[in-house]
Structure formats: C-alpha cells, structure tokens
Amino acid sequence: MAEEVKLLKTWSSPFGLRAFWILKLKGVQFDFIDEDLSNKSPLLLQSNPVYKKVPVLIHNGKPISESLVILEYVDETWKQNPLLPEDPYERARARFWAKFGDDKVLASIWNAFIKQGKEQEEAIGLAIETLKFLEEELKGKRFFGGEKIGLPDLALGWLANLIGVFEEVIGVKLIEKERFPLLSAWMQEFAEAPVIKESWPPHEKLVTKFRAIREPYVAAAAQPK
Amino acid sequence: MADEVILLDFWASMFGIRVRIALAEKGVKYEYKEQDLFNKSPLLLRMNPVHKKIPVLIHNGKSVCESSIIVQYIDEVWKDKAPLLPYDPYQRAQARFWVDFIDKKMYDTSRKTWATKGEEQEAAKKEFIEVLKTLGGELGDKPFFGGDNFGYVDLCLIPYYCWFYSYETFGKFSVEAECPKFIAWVTRCLQRETVAKALPDEKKVFEFVSVLREKIRVE
Image (cartoon, rainbow over all chains, first blue to last red; front, side, top):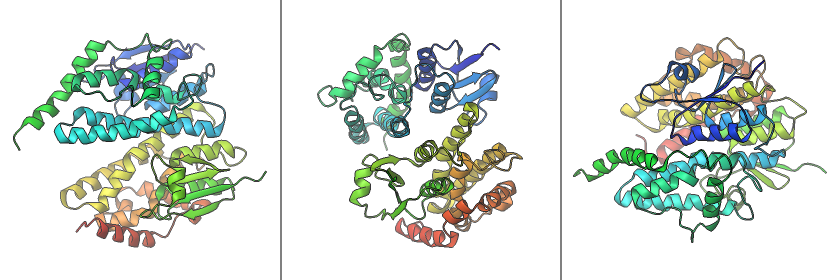
C-alpha cells in the first residue's frame, strides 16, 4: 500500500519546521499544507480537535499532534538516519534537552522579546541564565546529538534562525559570541546543514511578522499607568 | 553487577508517585530518599542542577530527570516485564500526546483550585473540570487509557487522585458529581496493588496542602 504522509504547518511556525526537517532528513515522501491560522481548515480542526494547532502529521489518514511527539513517531516509523540513540540513558538525555528547550528556553526568550523596560532587562537576564545550560551541554560536542544532528538539535533548531530575527526587532543581542562561543558555533553549523539550510522561512518576512506581534506589547507599555 | 537504583522524591509529589508506580510495576528494587523541598540537599542539586526538582532517578550513578522521561527510561531499561508504553508507534504517539496534555493542563489548573480564591478559583475549577472531561472523552468506554491494560497514560494521571480530596474541599466541588466515568477509572486503577501502595493517604495530602496554603497566605 502506498504511504500517504501529509504535514499541516504554517510558513513561519518553528514547531512545524521541526516536523518538516525530520521528514526531509529521513527522505520520506510527503505533502505539506501551510495553514492560515485565522481561517483554519476543516482538516486541521478535525485532525487536532484538542488544541486546533499546527503542526499535525497525518500518516495514512491517522493524525499525530504536538511537534515533539511527531518527531519521536517519525523516528520510530522510518528507521533510516535515526535521530535518537539506542542507549536508554542517552535517549533520556536527548528527551531532557528537547523538553528543556520548549519548557524553559523558548519561554525565557519569548519574555525577553515581549517585555519592555525594567521587565525586559530582568527577562534578558533570565534568558541568559537559561542559555548558559545549553552552552555547558555543548562542551565537547558538535551537536546536542553528538557527532550528528539528533532530536534535541531539531527541537532547539529554531534558535539558529529566530534569535537573529528577535535580536533585530528588539535591538538587543541575546546570544553574544564571546559569552556563548559553543552555542554560536552550533547555531551556525546547524543553520548551514544540508536540508536545514534550504528550509528557513524568508528572513525579512519573519522580521515583519514578529515586529507586528510585538507592537501591542510596546503600545501597552507606553500607556501612562 | 547489581543495579544501584536510587529515587530522590517527595512523598506527596504526583510526579514522584509516577516513578514509584513504574518501578513497582517492573519489580525494580530501589532506595527511596525523601527530599526536603524547602532545604534542598547537595545530592539533589548535584543530580538535577538544571531544574533542582524531584523526582530524580539515579541509576548506577547516572541521573535521569523529568518524571515522564524517567518513566520512559524505566520502560526501556527493564523491558522484559510489564510494558508501560504500547508496542505500536501510532499508539505510542497517542500515549505521549496524552501525557503531554496532562503535564500541560493538570498541574497549573489543579493548583489554582486550592491556591487561589474568588473569581480566579472559580475559573480554575471550571477549567479543571473541562480537563477531566476531555480526558474522560479520550478514555471513552475503555477500561484504561491504554485499552485493556493499565499503561503509561494511566500511570501518569492516577497520582493526581490523592490530591482530589484537597481540590474538592478547598474548591468546593465534587469530581464524582461532575465526571462519574473518571471516578470509575480511578477505582479500576486503585485495584492494582502497585498503584494502591504508591498513593499516599488523601487526608495526609490535605494536611500538607493546608500548610502550603498558609505559607502562601491564600485566605
């Protein structure tokens, strides 16, 4: 029976991009649909009734939601070019860093992006403290996955591209080379890796989008209290 | 070589209870070390420097953190007995999805049913009931989330049950009245010795929550 693999994502979602990457890295044939989140398709609403969010992977008609769940599903279903190691302890570490990325890094960077004034200073401080853990984890490694790209690299990969966008919009450098030499090197190497480098959404379009997202926060902070 | 397994945990933690159930299901012998969360031990800080939280599983000197990750680790290491996650990749993905849902939705909402008051508490109660109803919808007519057998999702959710008495008392509502199917599932889980032994007494949890409420000055 022919495999039918469909990915629902958006042009800009870093979560959708993860799923896109793993399918490409494994050489899986798939179709994708870039959703308009202001007008969600019936397929999306039916495939992810709990969250109604992207990405959703639909494999032979069966939907899977939540990007990290999708990554593990793809890794288990298409066994070539494995993203998770065999050893259970190393697998646990890979999952830990992927989860840390979503639970802590993303939240702290987002706060640094949307907050203003004194709150922003504090948020930037917290983001830097969080990023230090990533810098530490990269010691002696080329990628978070070791010698080659693994699950945590795909999970954290949004840093390689969106950090530059956020820094441009807020006018503050979050990941300085002097303070984060390993993380900076990883960002560059990941961004230029085969498959990854061809997939980045257009930079200017992202800057425009995120500048627009930040606007209401700037306006709110400028209101007299 | 004999395995050395140590669990750093806190008696009332619903996350720690998950790990205790998983280890019991697999028949793993381990040393339980109760942690003082208001005065964290050097061992805890060394074994979980990133989050400084329990539970932490220390297996032959190497630490595994984050309860859902620990349970998957236990399932993979002690794979010859009592499988916790399903074999089929699609079923596994569904199980991971629901544990992720539980992790995203249960803790914060349930905490607000006792840690807040007034409108915030009312909103939290409504949301908590909605979460239970969504889970009830997923359970459907199956005996367990895993189907015929107790599995990963059941194991990750049931520890919350010992806190229900506290949520209901402080929040003034009844889970059984709102979601009877859910309570039917709870009863089935409690028939399992591993679960019944791992859950602390709900009245002890209530005393603990009362102390916590005072500490954070809810009234």
